Each structure stands twice: as C-alpha cells, then as structure tokens.
Image (cartoon, rainbow, N blue to C red; front, side, top):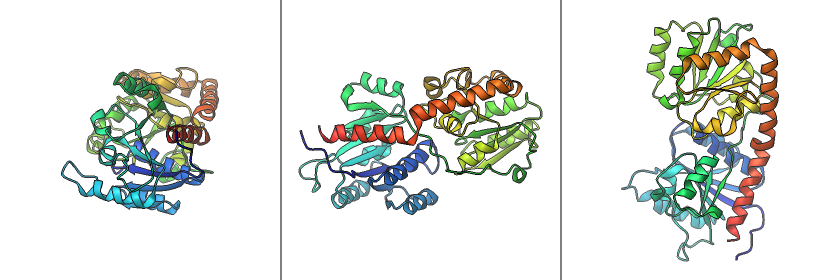
Length: 358
C-alpha cells in the first residue's frame, strides 16, 4: 500500500473527442470544476474546438494539443510520455476510447512517479482500447454493470454521475431576438444534431402542437435533414435551429418545457440541466434517462420514436400548472441530492484516493 498524496492532486485529463458534444462539454466542465476545487489540472486534447481550449485556458488550465490520430499516429503516444514525465501526475484520466488507446501505462521506466489511469466511459466501448486503464468511471449503473460482466473487478469500477454545470446567475435568453412571443409556450431542446438525438421525432410532435414554439440548440450532420423537415411540416415560423450554444442556463430559463427526445442515450446531461434550472422535463425511455427520471414525479417519459406520445406528454404539462410545479420541485430536489457539482467532485476525489492507495 502506498501513502495517499497530499492535496491537491495532480490530474492530467485526456480528451480526443469531437468538436462538440455532451461528453466534450462534460469534460471541460469537470476539468474547470476540479481546478476551482483546488486540484492541479492539465489537459491534452485535439485542436478541433478552439473555443473550448480558450475556455480551459481562461480557467487557468494548461492545455497541450496533440493530433490523437489513428493506428499510424505514434507521435501522440510519444509526446504523451514526455508530458507525463514533465507534469508528474497522480492521476491520468481519459475520456472515451480514442484517448485511452494512446495513454501509456505506468512502469518503472516511465520517468515519472507512480500514476493511475482512470477511464471515464459514457458508452459501451470495446475494452481492448483500455489496456492501460487501472480504474473505470461509469456514468450510469448500466455501464458499470456491463463492465463487470466483461470481467472488470467490482473494486475497479465505480458509477459517478455527470453534474449539471450551467452558467451562474444566468439571465434568460431573449425571446425577441429569436422572434418568439413572450406569451407562447416555448420548448427548449439541447444536443448535437445527430440521428441518436431524435430531433426529427420532436419536429413531428411539433406539428401536433399548434401555437407552441421550439428552440433547438446544437450543431451536427443532421442539420440539412432537419431544415428540410421544418419546411416540409411548415414549421419555419415556430422552430429555431440556434446552432451550438454555450449559454445553456440562459436558454433553459427562457423556455417553458425542456424536451429531451433521444433514440439512443447512454446518459444525457440535458435532463440534469433541466432539473438544475427548474424547468419541467419531457424525455424518452432511452437508456440514460430511464435510469434516473421517475415518470410523473420529476419528469414525463414517452416511448422512443413516438411523436404522438411525445406531443401528448408536452400537452399534459401545458394543461396542468400543478403538475408543472411538482415536476420542477421534485427534479430540483434530485439534482441537489445526486447531481450537484459538489456531490460529483466528492465522488471523484474518493475514487481517485482509493486508487492511489492501492
């Protein structure tokens, strides 16, 4: 057994994900929160999102940029070894599989003090990509259970929730700027414009909700198809595609209902952001939400890919102010108990220290 390190921990985070996305946003939020909590943080990431890199740097985090290419990219792994020798981390945390493939396992020849590799999984990735991983962080109970079914020892995996990091003291976004009446019911949807997010189903539901407006904040490959669907359904006057936005709290506070219609969602931080910002939630029975949302208590759940049921759940909230109030209060209570920044950071620190004393 080794001795637990003095605080703060030195933590190197590795992210090789897409330009935008939920995991990428959670990565930046978590790094900044750990820095604000007093840990010593450095980051290695790709160059594909200059705005995210600038946000990390503004928080006082040193950012290294590497390509994280395919199998022929030996440069990234070589540079990582040098970064680790210089930074001397207690913890190296990878996000998703590409970063985990490149991280070197510690050895006496590493030229750095003993470090542990923690890999955060937001989905069901091939474990052959995690050969250097000592410990796994699963963002849902189902992912944790799946890892153990694959042979990961129970003491090597822990379920740690995402937290909802939204802008403090946010002012509601302007409805006037988006040509949305102040007295109209406004739905807010957040996420990458990808088939998995099922915004096409939400648009079909909008056709059954006359007078209701919708803002979708996100960017991605499905934009052309969604634009065409908006025109086909004659929704151009009531639907706004806002592009990728970082003012999540401002958008949620401008709306009346948060809708999270995903087909496939291993977790999905959006439902937590809705609870944190005290806006009623309508979601689906995708894997992530159904593990946490209690239908009729802190949100309403519709079957996946069922536009009629989605519209019906939205209409229930519009028609019942008491239901709306109950959903808001119960959702906020669950957020404070299980998904606040403080709760999640405490869970990370506990797991890190358990690993460091192994």
